[in-house]
Image (cartoon, rainbow, N blue to C red; front, side, top):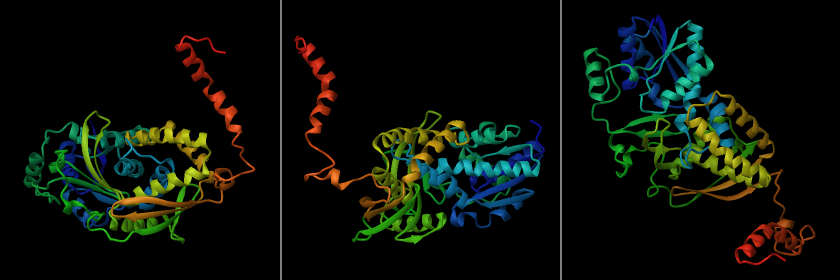
Length: 403
């Protein structure tokens, strides 16, 4: 493959630190490093200096946090997207926003290739490359893990030592982690034993339930057309809202999960995740829909939420199918405006109230007392018609002709 200039998705971690040098050695090409700031906090410190020292001609560090929350996280909240009923897609949603900017930089710089550091066993290789192909099919794609012979951590460390590449990790680091404003994921190393409980000192965003406050905290979350806009009556921009909710929910032990998920490539993978704000927002949003969506729309959307999560998990963000789902979801959210009260206590997130100016809940109908809007007698004919097929089948099974 004839490569003159490549844009590398660069984190400064073990893999991409080595990939930068490997690209120059293998293709004798110019390498532009690119890092996306999507809420990693201190992980980006010193990154540009390190990239240039390792051989990059330049290093882009792009703040995409607001775009990530606004265009990826909040749409997933509106969709109630949860993969396999547990995983809140913290990594899945991050990859398309990273890849989108990477493509923009590649086109701006006149590069002929893009490169990522995802392994050949994981989902991220698919997520990056589906985005590359969907946004700029003319760019060549380099996936080192699928073509080089550095196929073990020891070989990577040996390569780094040989080329004097500084690394932020050591040979005995017990797991790998990935962080953004939505979550932190932990995988590999000691976590590859699915029966081993994670070490408590591993967690960053959440307190353990045992150490969480002994008194519950109540929050009111306000939504406008499905989008969270305020906490406790304080209007906030998307990034500030996520940060504050991460802190409050995390302090109360909310947002931890430990799961074995089914990767797209067919491998079962154990992952431990901290998603405090996302856990609360999904629960509150789905509850608000219970009073603002009619039954049939709500049930259809519930089914499509699972489809949405699978699409996002599989890297199909820039597809016509995802575009169509987002259009449907946006339509359903026109009246999803209101406030949800949540109670956070020692790892639990409990809904304790909801209200909306567009509420379909009518106490005059729902009451057990006498109501002018609903006559109990009306249910007789409804039940007879609904149950007629059951009655006919049961009578035939008993050898009787229906009356």
